[in-house]
Amino acid sequence: MSFQSDYYKPLCDYLLELLKPINSSKYTFDQEILRRDFVSRSYYTALLHCKNLVEEDIDKNILGTHAQVINATNDEISIDLRKLKSLRVMADYDTNTFPMPLKTKKEIVHLERIQAIVNNIISKDYDNIT
Amino acid sequence: MLDLMIDYRLPNENYSLPVMVPQHYEEQYNKNHTLIEKLDRSGNTYDNIEMTIDNQIALEINDLGYTIENITKREFNDFDKRFDIYTVELKNEIEDYNLFVQNEKIISKKLNLYTKNIMLEIV
Image (cartoon, rainbow over all chains, first blue to last red; front, side, top):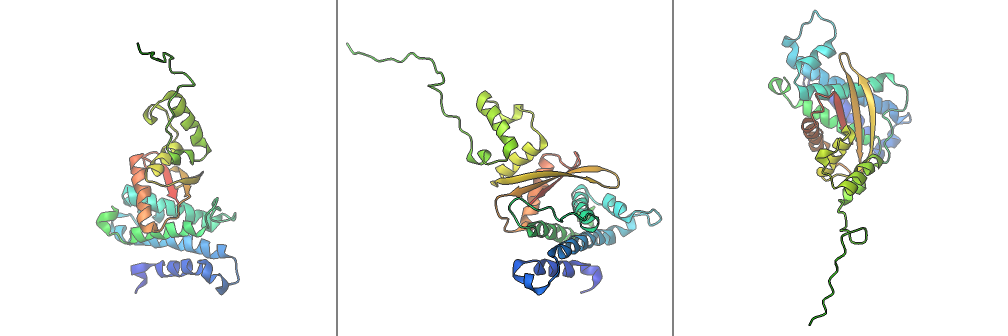
């Protein structure tokens, strides 16, 4: 399994497994570190997959790879990438509690949803993302 | 000759039919109560009431058979656009997110959320 085929996906799957309550005794630091890492690596997994597919469509001389990749994809994929990006920005830069606590559910449901979005994106080929 | 008892009273508050409000609408978050009251009083349909986008999202989610616990809104400024992100927390547990994220797409397309720069997160 090469990095080019799955990117950070194995790491994301591992982090999500660690975040299940049954595994909470396996580490002593704050779960939030794992959650933030999961979200950040999930976004880059989706972005790198799309970037590799649209590589020939984007201008390497123009700065802003994220923007170029997002603009090169269709509406559905573009909005999914932006959804992941909005969470990635919060995960990497916002020092408030992340993700925002839900009213009744555990934070892990956010992460399961993110995993599903990434699974959907990386299952698509060039024709389905453009 | 029969002694007929005919009630000529016109319908009034003692004579009104019960208003049928689906149970799941009653369980929606507080904002929707205003909408329900409007419907109860006027008999209007949803089409002729100007609804906020969160009400529209809530109704679509209810139509799929889910009950809403809470809706929050935040903003995201990307490189070229500003987005409103609505996070909808369901009371229901979601068994399979791989299938469920398709519901986000279906609702987003139906309500043209992409063109309105609105993102939907259902958890």
